[in-house]
Length: 270
Image (cartoon, rainbow, N blue to C red; front, side, top):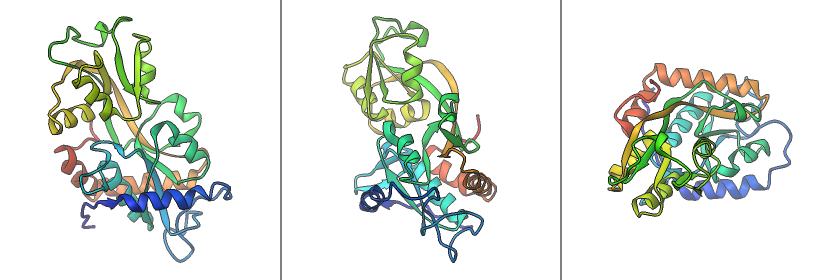
C-alpha cells in the first residue's frame, strides 16, 4: 500500500464530537462500518472508525498553524482504519477524560499515546505496543537536578494531568503542578515557573527543538514505557483486528514511513 501522510481538519473532529455526544446511550456495538463497508468480521454499525486523542501532545497529536489536526497518532489511526476497511475519524478530548469517554461508547478506541499500565488494564484492553518510549526528567540548564533522585519535597515538578508521570513523581515530591498538556508544562518550565518536568522523552526532545525551549534532559530514562491502543474492556473482536492491522502496517512499511516522518527513526523499537 502506498501510504501518504495526511492532515485532518479540526472542524471534522469538532463536528464528530457534537454528533457522538448525542450517541452515548447506544447499544454495546461500537461505531464503524456497515455490512457493505469495512471488515465483515467486526460488529461495527457506522462508516467510520473513531479514535480518541488529546490534540495537545505534539508531535503525536496537535493542531498546526493552519488549524489542522495532525501528528503521529493521527496518522497511525488513519492507517489502521484503512486496514480495517473504514474511514478514520480522530476525536479530540482531554486526556483526563479519555478513558471514561471510551467506556461511554463515544468512540471506538484510544490512539492517544497511552502507556500500558496494570491500573489501566483493569478498565480497558490494550493492543500490542505501537511505540516504545519512556519517562524523562527535564530541567533548565542552570538546575542542580541531575537525575530523578535529586527530586525531593522542596522541588516543584510539573506534569500532565492523569498521566503515568503524575503517579510516578508523587513518590518523590508532593509539590506537583498539573497541566492538561505536557507541552504547556514544558513551556512553563522554560519560563521559570517550575523546577522540573517529567514527560515522555520524545515529547521533550521534539518540543525543546521546535519551540526553542531552554531546557535539557536530566539523567537517563526513568523507565521504559510501552504504548498501546486501548479499546473497551471485553471487545476482543476489535482488539484482534487492530493488532492484525498494526502488524500489517509494520510489515508493509507504512508504520516506518510515518515514524521517520515525525522522529527520523523507528520508535517501535527500544
